[in-house]
Length: 177
Image 1 (cartoon, rainbow, N blue to C red):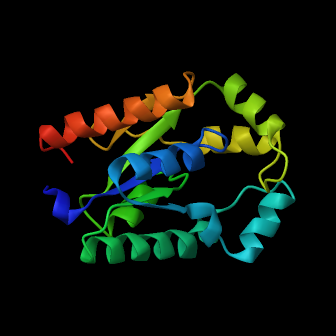
Image 2 (spheres, rainbow, N blue to C red):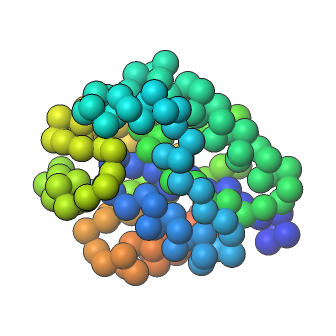
């Protein structure tokens, strides 16, 4: 893909893996724009998560469709766009790919202990609680190498972002994304 075509990337993973911060930094590194997928949840879904209730597939359907629409618009404009989105199941990722079949995923992976520590340190976020983390970890269908690059979040933020950039570039050079 040429630079003029732009690229679309979804930074994915469970809550507190760093989707927003990594996504923002990755967008800067790639010369693109960042969108936080959480900003596109329906108010009812935000209220549900604020009560500690996991979302259902039905709750996510409209949200994923909207994100796919944004991805498709970026593709049509040749824009580089990075979106932070949990994308826990393959079928969710398939929905997102409807906007762009060349969509790339960066899976941020970490231990339950590290993720829980991060959740507990967050102040003003609607996602709270160990039960919701466990629900996301149970729901997660980790992508294979055919679908995403995986980055361990145990390092510093700079290390995580640099690893993501390197892995994306290697895949692009091999023509895999």
